[in-house]
Length: 500
Figure 1 (tube, one colour):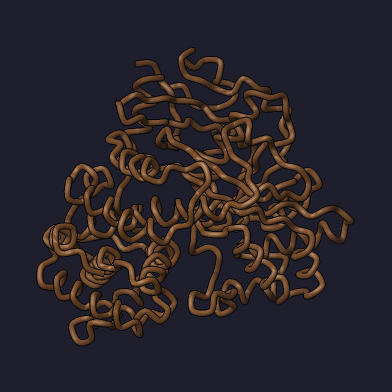
Figure 2: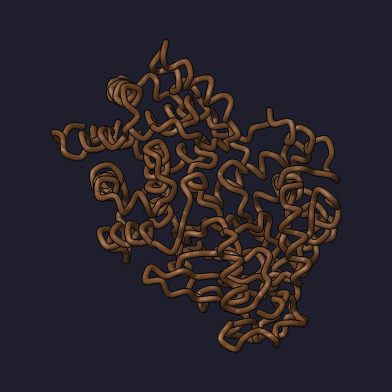
């Protein structure tokens, strides 16, 4: 094999003809979108939709400038810069077919931890129309007990006092919007692309609360002038592996240091509320609607909750990937019954969606053998995921008298996971969570107080006082701690008597 072709703008013409690449003139693109949090999902989703638009229409104002705020973003910044911000998207189909395409919609990348002023200035630039975000559920700095902005966060306290060198996204947004207001420029749109229900409403609430701590008049202007469209986003984008990098070298003689990987399915439902224009993403397959709520709730309560159900139970059992779980008939049946018995009855109707078909499609997607979606990734930051994905369904079923057994086993298994940091065979499990220590200490106390795990109020709120739940939860704790072979307990729930 020849020396691999390094991915960059000058080398695009040397790539094999069957490898799709940008046909638009990237040198003409200006930055209309600043995106905070460039990872696999952004590159497989918003950047993908934008690339499709740039390929099909003669538009130049919607180039993307990526932004990383933390030292952990340095590797992505370095690699993208070396590759002229190009990367390859590897789309893996269930039948083994693989599509590959070089994406060109990202045209710059800034590191806030090195030069916060450069990020603030780029956001404040008149050309910037949208600042979009994938900062994960934990990035919204919500006090889970109160639902308000968590001012106890040391970084938030620092940002209030140091507006020119912020650490959190709220500080950057506030500083940039202040500059635009002072310059007489219109506000930009703040667009969340995270798996968070009412994500636009949430970022509005948190940003206005933060800005109020610095400048009450500015906070009022932000609340009035900035648009925060809610959106539902969906595409499975697992962590890139060395085998993905090697695939490009073998198949295309291409050296891409960090390609993005995803499934073929993609969905983006967006509230059509923008301050100063938006891309015609509907021409790339996105859907603009008046009310996103039914779509996002459907996705969060089914897809995202389903991931957590399989992720936690599968990890404790000893599986490594979502695919392994779905190809286990009992896990598949457990998931489908969780969907049908606990999630669906508390969902609102979704116009134009056949829920039975949607649930079947989810299970098919989860079982895609080409997407090795590791359970360790699924379980990342579970303390911020479960309060959004799973616990609201549990609360609705408590209120309605519905089934809670499927969700209760998941939470009991999560307690075991957090306590032992090991699967049923004693093999170590990775715990990557902002509350790792609190989870471990509370779970470890289960031997003396079986409700101790539920006393983490920022995760569970008042669930420990719900007697119907605690009765079922204690039963599940006794089961899991008696034997961590969760398959045995899943079998008892799936094929046992139907009880709430």
